[in-house]
Length: 253
Image (cartoon, rainbow, N blue to C red; front, side, top):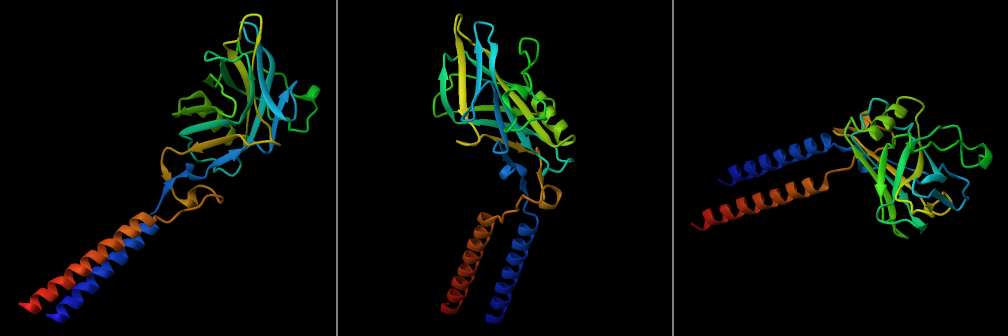
């Protein structure tokens, strides 16, 4: 009886170790766990300052007074990766003037031929949002010390399509940020957020499917599924205790 019990315990442990090995080998996760880039490389404002990135519109039509420029290098993403969702966060609002709950900020395609050292007069010209469709919009109120967040998902979304095209193009994603709506008549609506020197804005991209480390990026990391492993060991402990209790009861009887 004792020998059979020992064999049973060994079989249980072998099965548990095999399960753990399989769990670790097949442990995959969505790429958005650390697929994040920030604007530390390049950020600027047309007619703005080095300390703040500024979007400003004047009068009811929100005629562009100042527009923010943002740029991300996405060269470390595999060109074959499919982007399923994107979250772009402008961090952190330093001040706003005349913006209300109806004020909107829009993201627009921007050229890549600039960096933070480019002189103001040599920066590109912002698009006219009255005749150009925004890739995404965020609606106020924009609170000081808060963030502006643009979100998109789905292969047919214009923002996703633009990012995807840049990944398979020059690996650089650039945006204008403009005030597109909600400007007071006879006044301006302005939102300013941190520049490179005083904060970080981020773009987080995620794949619609889970992928393994080898198929994504050298900068990604495949984490160990510790909750699963802990659960398996807890199960093993219960099984061993149960077998031991059974053996003890059989001996007493």
